[in-house]
Length: 402
Image 1: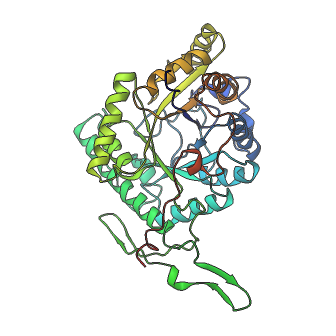
Image 2: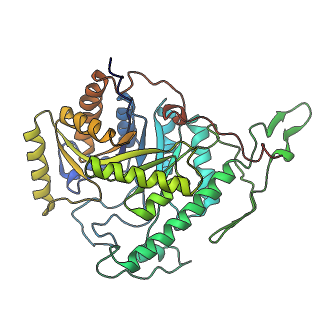
């Protein structure tokens, strides 16, 4: 008797009207509502209806751009966005089980601020928070803050020795950023709050700890001002396109999103990340590696291809993003995901090309396909995001040594 297939984890990446730059011009796009709470609530509620593990919410510190190195001055694409952490906090009370993972940019934000923002989100959502750590090498974004200078990259962008060195430096900084955030989450022991009105004792000060982090990029004393999150450690995730980012995932993340083009490529990436885990002395810690895919989904594959062509025509050029694109039916996508899973991926983060069309195609088309194959849940089995991902609640590092 053949063994049952391993279950898949499934997330969606939400960004405005969708990931295709012409998505906002589709009839289902609701462009006048993109900056409303109702719009984002509808998206996340739809994702929860499909029993997805979590949603990620895109963010940045500059206007969206078709250029990887700076602004593009275009006015025919969506520009402007809401703060991802605040969107997640608004949606949290209106959802029950799905994980909420906003993007945070480590390059220009202090880890102390991020630690308490995500800890707050974890409290508000009763244990469903995470973050997606991101870096930026755009000089125009550095100019918003005025505290550091990032030199302009050459015309070739990041695909040069100079560009790669800038990225490596920023990713090393992001790893330290995450380490500070994690230590701050642990700076309150779980039972630090007494809340005894009769004795007048609200907290046990001996159970709040200085983290005294001294690194190359940050010097943070602590403790946090926010009690330890319900999950202990909310989920940390990162998108990884190459070796330097694989190292960040291996050193600092619970979930890494990788852009594999086929099973051989996926297998090589997973092996690279596992090797980096070994170097970072984290081989004994669970780490999910998710495939990242942009999707155009229709029941008829020809309709999906025609829709993609129509969107490209509206945009004026074929869309080439930073991740592989899949065009076809939910059945074909299910086949593709299972094939990639065989290379060592434990889940997938799907980017709906048009949120109003492709997100329901995922929740109402792909999910039933995966359920029929016995590789996706039929009901939520845990109340926290760590639980959905099969990750235990970690012990507090300071309580263990106090």
